[in-house]
Length: 298
Image 1 (cartoon, rainbow, N blue to C red):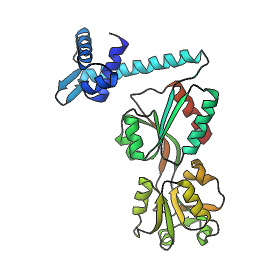
Image 2: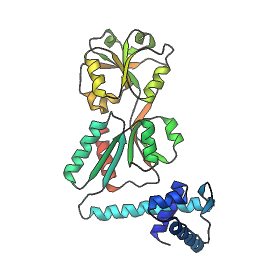
Image 3: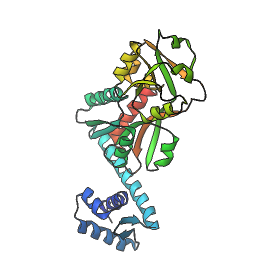
Image 4: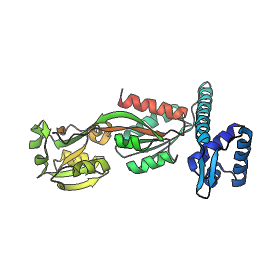
């Protein structure tokens, strides 16, 4: 038995197919198949049920694969700590996010790059659904999303780390008559032009109103456009309260105020990051996340 065989076990379980695993590992199918057969013979245990539909771990295989994954994670920690003794930091940061936190994430990465020039970084701007897919498939290390308990229960292979918790609010120009209210009601929205950030949760929230659809002026992914609309008193904006803390384009202005919704239109949402339980977090990713925590949480 060797470390490479442990990697093979984990990859086959993750891919669900010997052929796909062989492609991902840059091996020939016969070579991978023979290596697993040799391991099964050495352990005297069948690790996978093989069929035309793919390879599924046996009951014993599931348990051993979980332990193999833990061994590989510990090995990566060992390598990271060994690198730390040389006082060098290298590797790659691959992140997916929705547009809002982009400026903040770029700022943190820029700070790290100045300290550790060998670091490579890639940031992808995607929808929540695409971010989750990229993390599940290993295309990125970490994804920044808004989520609810529903997603936490649905995606068991993902770790959800909450950075902020919040709710929907209405942002209005400080000179708007609505700015004098402590709470916003459905009736107050009926004659107001509204601009929305293009997010599935915001759309679902709006559909919860009996008077929906309202006068939706437009929907956009550009937070600067939303800020300009608010500053010009062209429309009101409905979105997450924490967006006015984490989205640089929205947090720069004092020309508008944020107002909570009256019950029953109050629901909790979380902003944070996700990563795949099957993939360890490298030293550089852990350093990046530590700085994100410091920037947002303090």
